[in-house]
Image (cartoon, rainbow, N blue to C red; front, side):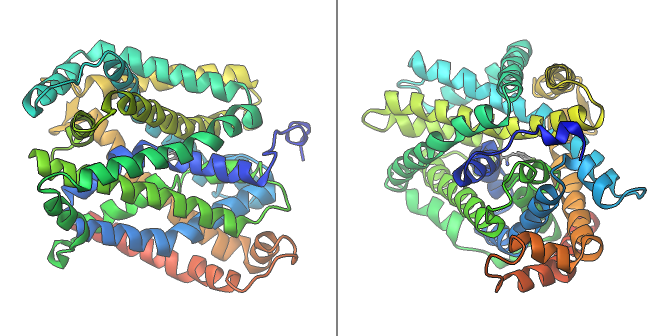
Amino acid sequence: MSEENKKRDGFGSKLGIIAAAAGSAIGLGNIYRFPCELGDNGGAAFLLMYLVMVVLLGIPVMLSELVIGRRTQSNAVGAFKILAPKSGWPLVGYMGVLCGIIIFAFYTTVAGWTLEYIFKAVTNSFHGKDLATMQQDFADFHNLGWLNVILQAMFIFLTGYVVFRGVQNGIEKFSKILMPLLLGILVILGIRSATLPGAHEGLAFLFKPDFSKITGEVLIDALGQSFFSLSLGMGVLITYGSYVKKTDNLTSTAFSVIFADTLVAVLAGIVIFPAAFSFGIRPTAGMGLVFNTIPMIFNQMTGGYIFCIIFFALLAIAALTSTISLLEVVVAFLSEELHLNRKKATILTCVLTLIIGSFASLSLMENTPFAIGGKTVFDLMDAISSDILLPIGGLLIVIFVGWKFGKQKFFDEVTNEGTLKSSLTKIFFFIIRYLAPLAIAVVFISGLIKS
Ligand code: PFF
């Protein structure tokens, strides 16, 4: 182990890793991206397929990443170099780092909006607005391209500041208290939304599946969304796994994170769809779906002013704990493999991300020059990372663990060298070796053919 590896930070407690991994998983992917995908893909059928992907693939892929990380105590690239020296496998890690930069770049466009919406909430600028005005304001805001870029820059450098302060101090402190608070506010919002007039239509859209809507495209979107939401397929959990103590239980960590993440996503659906149907917002409204619906719900609530501020502040923090993990993958790689110091690595990544990310932000303006074949740069970055790179990353990771890393090492790592019970471990390994690669490959190929 190199000198640098010996000095690595680690998570101080069991709750630390769960909080940090859940912090990475829970974010705009749950509250913003999930409803958009669900709305675009026909509602309940998508939810069902999403849940199948999470249950079938979430645990095996997450366990595989954690196992690789903890075993090697190394970053996404270094881990493969240690386990499979002089082979092509480290490319999986490089792909993860690249994917991390792409996601960080477009994710911070939306993360920047949360800052604007905190400001709007504080200045009470949603008060008394009807839907048409709300929608117009949202469109006008996108057209202020440079304001979007400035907000994005603020978010990127805020992330950089936290990551620079180090794993334990930076990440653990933020995640522990605030995510349960977000859950609480979503429950309150969900109750208000589900009791609005006409809410039942939204609930039916969310929970009554129309099986004829399940197409190859729906499947690949559900696969991409499940990996995106659980932060899988690009080495976040390899990197975080490398900070986990040898005595922690990886299986229960994976279960807790997946449970919390899925709960938040489903709750976000219960918040958005009943209200959207009640207000007459189309489920296919895309970006405006969440950013217009939520303030409208608060307008209908006693104490809405203060709840709205708290909600957008928590959303910004949920986004921050996710961007921290994206940046951490890149910084751990640059500092451990290329021997840059953490400060330089952080600044370099943030500047590079801002340059790439500003194209994503500016591509959402009306008549933008930043669109290719009718798709905005934002959408392209989203699709390339979530629907292509993450599934390929996840596929290669399970193949690696199932066929190269091997059963014995997997058992040793998951059972903490035989000290934990291992009844489910056999099943997980079977899924990792056979089922998961097959399922990801079939979904991926069927999606490519049909889209
Ligand atoms: N899982 C995060 C979310 O749902 O908001 C986004 C994300 C973070 C995706 C880290 C991928 C990743 F590696």
